[in-house]
Length: 114
Length: 112
Image (cartoon, rainbow over all chains, first blue to last red; front, side):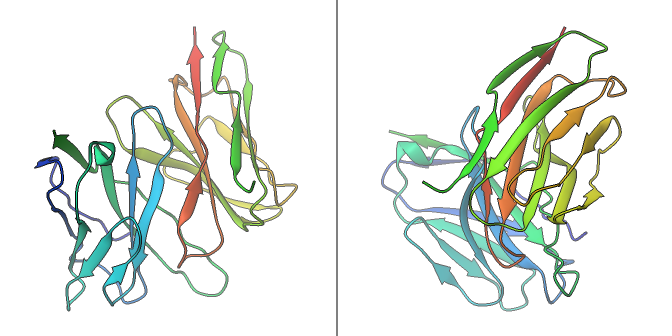
């Protein structure tokens, strides 16, 4: 399975933008890039996903490099509720009806300061 | 409301006993997953299932068993063969590889 590399931790101030990087140099052409976040003692929450083009939703934006070897999750205005562990995951597509595994790495611990 | 439900939230068992964790979803999702999380660590995949009556081992399947007799249900049994069963167990479901996954709130299992 293709692997991702994320910084162990990042810090931000409230109401400032946050750019969370992820490297995935071994990504294959059919791997989707997924982002999840997890608050303490809770299950992960889906944030966003994309394949080639940049994506936006109500929670965040996903910027994907042209060569797809890296991506960045963008929180436009961080709030205290955004403090969590953020996971960047590649979801492999094995063809047919195969849905592929979701393999989690260590993630990035985001601290948001008031 | 549609969602994925894990029960119970907390579970205590004596060493040597098998225990079954429940996971139910009413999202009509084909794929379901079980993960284990230890303190300060990421999630590790135990088993996953893409259709009824079919499932595959994940990265740490030893000491665990699953069944998928119904689309809505994917119970996980932690057997006495699992050497370190105390952990936070998470169940997830998804509709396809290009879609996001939904997670339950987890079951914290403590074996004493």
